[in-house]
Length: 525
Image (cartoon, helix red, strand yellow):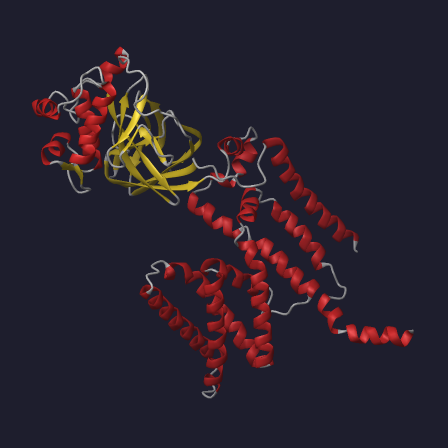
């Protein structure tokens, strides 16, 4: 083997493997994905429509709170100045500057939610500290605990004696939970919720806190997020002081004393998550993604001591960009396998990358449905070609007609999916159909140049190679490795150098000429 090929191939292998070893041994990055139940990456985006004058946007940030820990955060605010201030019940990021046209503000953080045994309302019911009592039993505009109607309601509820603090909390919680209906379009005012016996989530929480404060039990409204893969939505619940700790209480879910692992706290004063002045409008959207590492490992990876490594980490990118790169970084592995099958095994196919693109289409549709669509496309190519040959059309218009037939088949699949209530079918196959349309073009060209037998043979082998590549594209382990260690691409390139330098017999050649070789051996003996 040529010395330059050896130096190039081994150099790339050592470089890529060395960077990977450095990350693993020095920074402690894991080689396998871990799926902790409470580790999330959350992206809060505020779209701002300016008014052509100075303004500000205030965004609630995650708090250091029992049961949750923030271990990495970064923001993007275009040309706006950013300042973060901590208050007793909130952390607020202020984005200020000249608000012209449109602005996009982003705040991304990683957070761990872990189990915290709150023991419900069990345990001693000592008197709360004076600081807690004075801060969380006083009336407020949104929590009118001294209003006559609230005191009248408390009398009608016939609560247990004041010494039975836990029982009193349960009685008021049960009243709000079962006697006040939640209606999303209803009011968030505590008194109106009480009088009408209906309110939205915030209205019911405010009523619960108001009634608890009326009987002298410290309580507060908490604003936060309920996280889910790909999305998040605002939630409100209450926290009640009992047994020298805060106890969560959610009328919406009926949970008293235990907060779900997918809920995080942003504000403990019940305030809005985003406020703006000097702008025409500001809209908040939140996306969430489960972290693939334990909290300690993610923290070590996201905030390394080396600033260069921190800057190059792909985990700093937005969630949508990460999702695209996770697919893109698998393509080199597919290209390596296709190169081995083509150059060393000697499998024929439609071009070099068409099998890999077919595998990518199968990733988007699923193996079963994808193979059906490939078969339909090849059938359209064969049948359509036979019909169009009689019209003696030129190549490009003929291929365009075949493409139109593929699109009609897609429309039929879409209507069929609606019949079976598969709502997201069309959204998932748009990109695969583009690939399959390229497949029908390759099939038609081979059909015209080499005949139906060669076209079907290469089509079958192309699908076979795609099925070999498909497991690579759906492997969570490989996706994690390539995204966490993109330097592995250098290792793939090094291997491709060796594959590309191979000029010996392919496996298919040995199989094809084995009878000739056998006769030669027999004649020689």
